[in-house]
Length: 160
Image 1 (tube, helix red, strand yellow):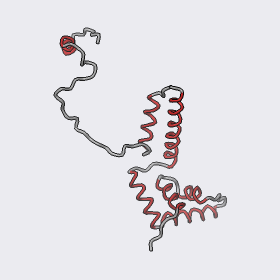
Image 2 (tube, rainbow, N blue to C red):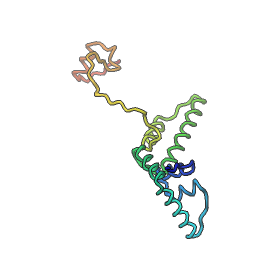
Image 3 (spheres, helix red, strand yellow):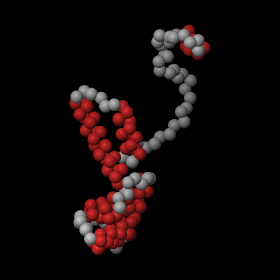
Image 4 (cartoon, one colour):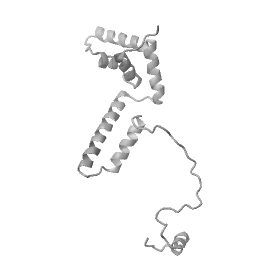
């Protein structure tokens, strides 16, 4: 019968899958504070043995494949903190009827996407198509004469 990982072993596998060194992941999950080289080597051996176990190794590989990219544990933790802080800042700004700078929002969004924290569930690609009756915004109320002036590039300033 194949062995199933318990919750601590699963957590260890996820930390390793996201780039945390095996020793650090093992100590975070199972605790401990090795001081001597002998204690450190013992922790390294246990972490290596656990990571090499068939069920744990397959968990690590599956998680890495699922994410499509490997990011460091520090990047993932920083992205999670940014996501929480941004959410708190948005709620606070809404309460004060203020707005956040668009550059802050866009920068945070790009970082979160890069680290896999924020991504659409589905990607839909479109070819752009062709519309016979498309009118760009801002010109729908302009007269034909004004549009001809723009097309001719006469240099005249038109008050829209």
